[in-house]
Amino acid sequence: MPALSASAPGKSILFGEHAVVYGFPAIAVPVKAIQVKATFQPNIGSQTSVICLMEKGKKNEFTLTDLKQDNLFKSVISQFQKGIQYPIPPFYLTITSTIPIAAGLGSSAAVSVAVIRGLSQFVGKKMNSDQVNEIAFQSEIIQHGTPSGIDNSVITYEKSVFFQKNKPMEFLDLHKELFLVLADSDERSLTKDVLDFVREAMKDNPKNYNRIFQEIGKISLDAKDALITGNYYSIGNLMIENHHCLKNMGVSSLKLDQLVQTAMDAGAFGAKLCGAGKGGFMVALCERSKQKYIAEQLRLFSSNVIETRL
Image (spheres, rainbow, N blue to C red):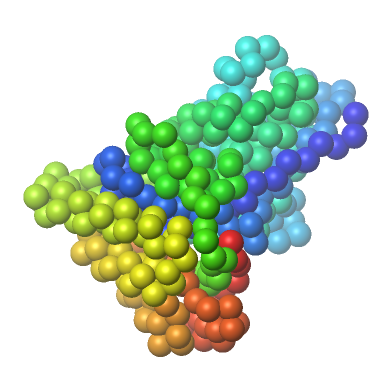
């Protein structure tokens, strides 16, 4: 059997971080400039499946049986197994990725989606996007505790989405192309830890956090209309408002604030942290003609700057 490969993009949340976990709307977009690739081959002559992570040209191999139940690979393969209800032959899985880990760009969800799609080819079980998305979401629950489901959704369908828990997901038909620049704060945090932080802070001050969540929810609703009509100025202003809300929640950082200000000073329409916060990336919306200049200015403070468009 030849090697079988599947891939999945990263993602950026444009509006609605954290509030989306509590039932408010959010908007996320795929970032196709960064990808996870999962390549499956039969592990002939072995009774054990092996996973090989390729990181900076180096191999890091481990067997599936050695992994703990809450490990990302173990959890997604276990959820896939439940879905098909028959044994998976031993495989050799190679993972390569350009999506930074624990940076708010959907690394774990992208790994899950790529692995599920690769596994479905490997075992000859065709799955549609809805099935892939559901398995990826179950894996996200194991990884993050109380995820909203937005990461796995935008990555599975590779479309901009307007998302709200327990409501039909809406794909957004953008009126104009969006030019984005993402910059790494070079700080790392686990999504689960930041979700736990917000949950505990909300218990201590529910009135304040409910007010912030409601404000973020309104921002997401207004942003939906602005994105559909292609009003860059409105989108940018709403991004800044959303960032201030996230700052008030305590999930920004000095470095993220610096990157947001740098992007604005360089001519961005708007900028904000993206993802759970307390590190990770920020995202800026800009004109096509200013994208490279804004990226250059951000590289003065960031080790990883990504230019992309939708």
